[in-house]
Every structure is written in structure tokens, then in C-alpha cells.
Amino acid sequence: MLDKTKYHIPEHVGIIMDGNGRWAKKRALPRSIGHKFGAQNFRKITRYISKTGVKVLTLYAFSTENWKRPADEVSALMVLFKQYLIDSLTDFREDDIKVVFIGDRSAFDPKLIELINESEEVAKDRKGMLLNIAMNYGSRDEILRAVKELCTEASEGKLDPQNITEKDISDRLYTGGLPDPDLIIRTGGEFRLSNFLLYQSAYSEFYSTETLWPDFNEEAFDKAIIEFNKRNRRFGGV
Ligand code: FPP
Image 1: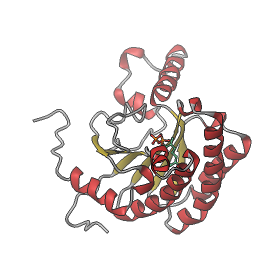
Image 2: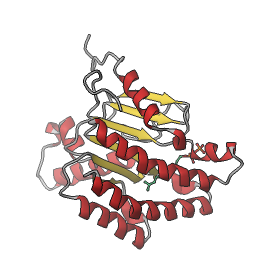
Image 3: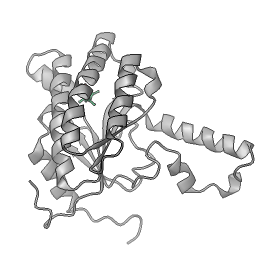
Image 4: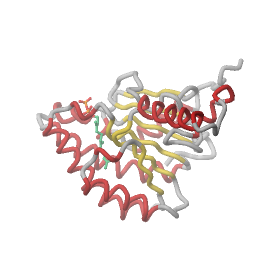
């Protein structure tokens, strides 16, 4: 476990969990098996991160674009979401992790929506780390929703368009009221945000690792924190 007295622990960490497919391919296994190991790692690493002192963890589990994948892969992912949400209900209770889902849940099947609602309900009074699970989440869609809300409020005379502030926008995002992410980690070696927390990540440090998601363990997370501690965050200043 990382020595908290030696390292500054970011308040909010976002993770793009990429590389399940490649992990499976390297082992000549179907992609769905990569997702299964990815989902197991989701449970394990979330528990670890909750003990490091991180206050908010946002995990990108399913994007608004992921529906374009082959139907059998999408349905395998939905089965995994259900399975691992049920299992995580117990785990996360032990660690006092508060679970919230961000994204448009209405597109999921009724059983999954029920599980999502239940996971949030049972965790609502917990005081530990806040875990945002982004499912059917897309940052552009999130910004569009905020814009529509603002337009509606303006048309009803509740606000003056000339006085809209940056905070008015961020308050209407799914992450409204939360600190912006300090660190965004992407596994699987790519260097892009893929429609994840675009508005919120204006000053986030970005860390990309070749490690594929199912292999992203405690040590790999610690490495990201050590690297984050080397960055000189200026937020546009000097
Ligand atoms: C990206 O790997 C991963 C996903 C699209 C799914 C992420 C989901 C999980 C890890 C499961 C999380 C589980 C719960 C319960 C929230 P990829 O398929 O794009 O990998 P590739 O780039 O190697 O093809």
C-alpha cells in the first residue's frame, strides 16, 4: 500500500478501463472472457483504491458508442454488469463505498435498471469513497443535456443567458457538485479521452499505461500515483 505521508493522493481519479479484448486475444480466448476478467478487476481495484484515500473514483464502464459493438459482445457485457453489480453490493458495503451511476440508464433492460437503482439505494448513506460508474455515458451527451436544461430555464425566465457561468454548466453535469478529476488514467496504451469527462478534465493530469485493464493491479495504480506526484500542476498559471 502506498505511503500516504510520502505522496499527495488525488481527490478525484477517473479511469478509462481499456484493453480487455486484447488481453483475451493474447491468450487466444474470446473477448467476452477478457471482459469477465476486467469485471473481476473492477471489484478488486475499486476496493484497493477506496483504501488509498481517494475520495471520488469515476470508472468508464460502457460508453454511448459501445452499443456499436457486435450484439453478442454487448449482451455478454450486460450479463457481466448484472453479475458483478450483484457481487459488488456485498463487497462495497464492507468498504463503505457509495455507488452512483452516471449516464443514461434508461437505455438498459429493466432488470439492469433495477439493479442500478438498488445499488445506489443501498449505498446512499455510506460515508466512504464515492464510486461513479459511467454506463451508457458520453461526455458530449452530458454537455448537451446541460445545455438543454439551461435553455429551458432561460426560456422560462429563470435565468439570464448573459449571466450563465462555468459553474452553471458544471452543476448540470452528472458530476455536478463534485471536484474535477485530478488524474485520468487510461489502460491499454492509447492517448485519448474517448468522450470521457471532457468538460471536467480541463486541468486533469493524463496518465496512459500499456498495462491492459485485467492486469491493472495495486502496484500499477501506485505507479500512476507516483507519476502524478511528479507533475507540476499550474492550472494555466506560471
Ligand atoms: C474496454 O476494453 C472495456 C470495455 C468496453 C468494458 C469495460 C467494462 C468492464 C471492465 C467491466 C466493468 C464491470 C462493471 C460491473 C462496471 P476493449 O474491449 O475496448 O479492449 P480492446 O481495446 O483491447 O479491444
